[in-house]
Amino acid sequence: MGNWIINHGLTSFILVVWMGINIFLFVWFYLFYDLGDDYYYTRHLLGSALAWARAPAAVLNFNCMLILLPVCRNLLSLLRGSFVCCGRTMRKQLDKNISFHKLVAYMIALMTAVHLIAHLLNVEWYNNSRRGVYDKLSTALSNLEDTDNTTYLNPIRKTDVDAQQSPTYFVFTTIAGLTGIIITLALILIITSSMEVIRRSYFEVFWYTHHLFVIFFIGLLFHGAGFIVRKQLTTDPPHNYTLCKDRIEEWGQIPQCPLPKFGGGPAQTWWWVIGPIILYLCERLLRFIRYMQTVQYRKIVMHPSKVLELQLVRDGFKMDVGQYIFVNCPAISRLEWHPFTMTSAPEEDFFSVHIRSAGDWSDRLIDIMQHLPEGAQGPKMGVDGPFGTASEDVFDYEVSMLVGAGIGITPFASILKSIWYKFKTSNPKLRTRKIYFYWLCRETHAFEWFADLLQVLEREMEERGMGDFLTYKLYLTGWDQSHATHAWVHFDEETDVVTGLKQKTHYGRPMWDKEFEEVSKENPSSVVGTFLCGPAVLGKVLEKKCAKFSDVDPRKTRFYFNKENF
Image (cartoon, rainbow, N blue to C red; front, side):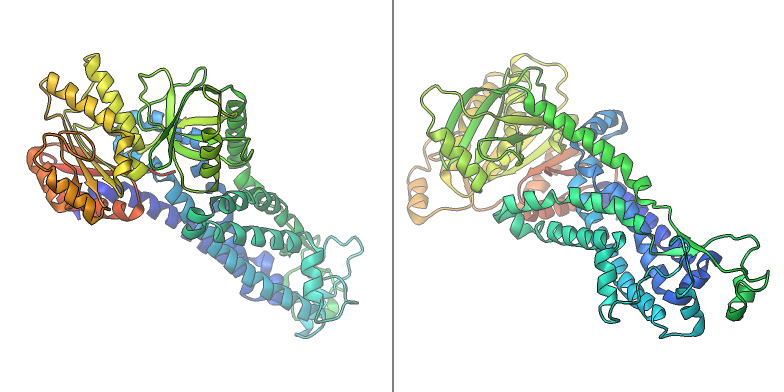
């Protein structure tokens, strides 16, 4: 339990608070509509479906307020910088922005389903009341004359439509009905296209359908203006429902029972979402300003395994280790922005990204770059960022474990380059005294991406007598028999046959229990930051190992898990 608290305590507390607010809003508004005097006559027509429609609406307002905030990346970067004094645990929560975004989306989907079902029942019961199917009171309430068409209770006003078609006619001819359909369709498309299999295989589908959120929010703002749920208004003299509900024939005839009047609204959704919408608009405005800034190519390099390296320059660009940017190429698509972790160091006069062939957009970009004339500038490139990530905190730990899988090496390339520059200038601010680096790749060509950097670091450490500062292990997870035979024949050579490094390549996957136990023994009283840029499956394994090998005693080794999220 102590280990779990170290790694998950604050996250769980935030989730409990979020869930508590959702439950409170649901219960509060359910009781408000289920017990409120102003809604007595409305409840008579609709029953408990009134409360079941309105309570989810309140939860929807709250979560629609939250859904945009985790994707306001400039805001998160600003907060991340503000939390420097608040400790790494608080900053770690900002790195889980996408997970929270998904969680809020699930809540919106659930509450939308409940809200929709309840209102479908409400429309049916409104229609039946209008047709005189129920008791006299329901019929009287539905037939109240309203010359100005503003103080009615039953929103179904037309009776010259076929009884079976009346609910459909109502849904497609009212503000609440039309916007409800639009919101629901947009939400279904957004959620279905966000599934992992769609996002990985057809990123463009995910990207474009996700922008239906614009239609979703426009519909949301107008949805409440339909006023289909109405409450009793105060009249002079007042209409006392406890006395008058059984004296329908005397309504308007005696002072105690004037004709009841009803009204809707005011629409409340915009109260909740206007702030986040303004923040998000500022976010997109800032992106547009950055897009208009000129980005020049310093160097274009094509690496093995179809990996493209772009070295770029933009006036006023400042970065920190492990940060990422969004890249847009108008020659391919003006709307698509893709995130890439920067592989350059803050000490360099350019910033670079490595782009692996992983879809239509990256394939087209690589194809364009391969057909450029020698020395030519590439197509116009828009850059938004940089944005903060978990890897920014790597130098805040005495000991760091860096785990990269395939192209997931990119944030750690930035870190390793920065270390090299810090050693070169003998930077006294470097707190980190030990780094363990693990790189897992499926094919040998992948190691060529940064083997040169590792060779330079290896040589630099030896010259400075700091060979123990960096311990790195490279794992080849995919090979054939001929490769294994070749490695065995050259096993006694001083350098590795795959990378040319003194550190030999391991075949297979790391035995993480052994690795964590070794790190724990070598650093008996240290705080160890474990950083991953790789698949979620590996993240779950490392997260469990961090909890398993952390000691509750603050004087002993503790592991903190950090994962890159885009």
